[in-house]
Image 1: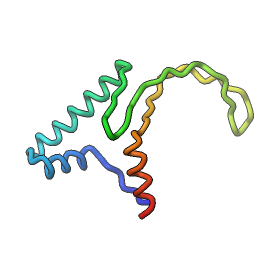
Image 2: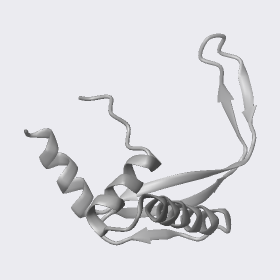
Image 3: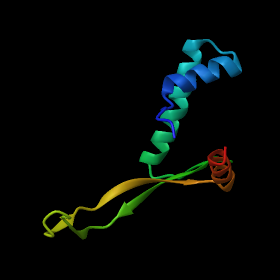
Length: 100
């Protein structure tokens, strides 16, 4: 499997090619979409993108963990975590990509 990473600039370039906006406008559009998604997640809202997946924030309670090296019990503080659940279409598309 390749080590290629899709970046903001790659997304902006794709918008530039496919939509026809200028490079600057394409970069602004990508930034705006990512900012809206981030702001909604910070507010604790779910972000559902049809045929792609759902981003959500979960609150995890404090719990006791264990240092794997020493076996010593360590408290893990409560925290908020971001989770992503892909849509069935996305799962199928990714699985089909593995068969090539």
